[in-house]
Image (cartoon, rainbow, N blue to C red; front, side, top):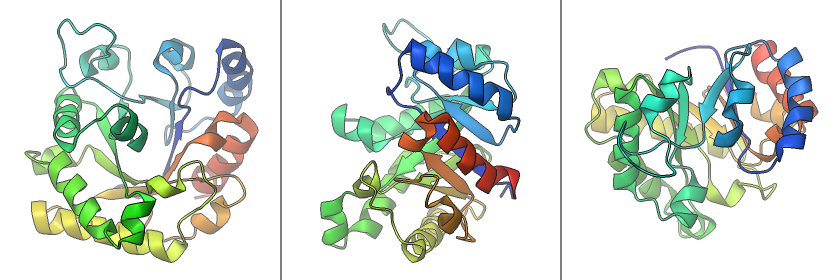
Amino acid sequence: METKKIVVGNLKTKMDINDISKYLKIINEQVIDKEVIICPTSIYIPYFLKQRYSVGLQNTFVNDEGTYTGEITPKQAVSMGIKYTIIGHSERRIHLDETDELINRKVISAINSNMRVILCVGETLEEKQLLKTDMVLRRQLVNALNGLSIDMLDNVTIAYEPVWAIGTNNVASNKEIARTANYIRMILHQNRGYENMRVIYGGSVNEQNIKELNQIENISGFLVGGASNDAKKFLKIIEEVVVNQ
């Protein structure tokens, strides 16, 4: 398992081109670490390339090439120098009906095209209240990583992002996150014999709680949503997690 922590900024669909221009004036000048991965809306990708940080996509298609109107294939992404893709985000599972099986195919396609996958898993509030968190995570992990070899798993980072915490300011406690990270690693060890999985946390991570969250010893970084859209707030998170490590 890599020891350096990472920070992934999922910009989602929050900014228009004017916002992006202002954002990049700050980010391009101050972010100088490849452990920072910024994932903008796909139409803005060219503005983020060839900088001193890494760039990722918020999603890639299930096949690496072919005629699929409106999609972006892993092969296309790699040809532009994009190394990372987020797969299985809860917003896509919920709003676009992405299944574990589809996510599995996307993961395999991305890795076969030499991309690194940030695989999102997490439970809803109802599942949490019904004490189904472990069952849900086991299902998501086993299904999404079905058929991957040990070498392929080296290119996966698990992002534990409880659905109930995304954009709600309800952050999981450090104890909950640490326990869940250990559980995720246990599942990978039991099911696949894999011991070195990198696990990061996402879900209302911001510049105010990052110092406390960064004290969790078994977390390898953070997936940041809303706060990553504010350049100054995002820089504070980067400084705490990446610059000061």
